[in-house]
Image 1 (tube, rainbow, N blue to C red):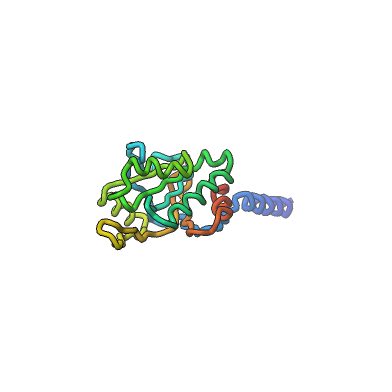
Image 2 (spheres, rainbow, N blue to C red; image 1 turned 120 degrees about the vertical axis):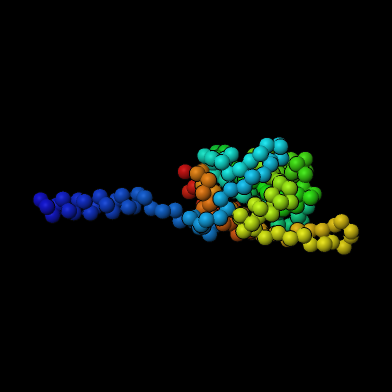
Length: 192
C-alpha cells in the first residue's frame, strides 16, 4: 500500500509539473530583469500615462519617431499585422509608440501618425528631459544625426520593442525585422 501511495504521489507530481510548464518564447525572455519598470508620458489625446494605465493588458512598447524613413513605419506595419493575426485577442494588447523626437513629434502629429497603423495604438511623448529619463530606464539608445539642410536631422535609435505582461512586468525584448509569426506566438502565450 505504501508503494502504491508513493507511486501515485510521484505521478501526481509529474502531472502537475507538466501542467505548469513555463512559457517558451521565440523572442528574448527578459523576465525578472530590473529595468523598463515604468514611464510617465502623455498620450496623443493629452492624457498622462504610465504602465499602470494599462494594467490587465499585455503592453508592447516601441521607441521611434514619425519622420523615420524605414525602421519605424516597417515596425508599425508589422505590429498592425500582429493585431490582425491575433484576432479577438488583440483587444487585450496595447501597442505604445514612444517618440524619441519630441522636438518635432507634437501631440497632434502623433495623433495623426500612430493610429493610422491601427486605431488602438497610442503615441506617447514627453519633453526632452522626460524622453531622456524613459530612454535611460528602458536602456534605449537615441541620438540626433544632423542632416544636409539647416534644421533637418534624423534620429538613430534602438529598433527593438519591449513586451510587458498583464501585471506590468517586462517579459520580452523583440528584435526588429523578424516578421509577425514569432511575436504572435509569444503574445498568444501572454494573452491566454
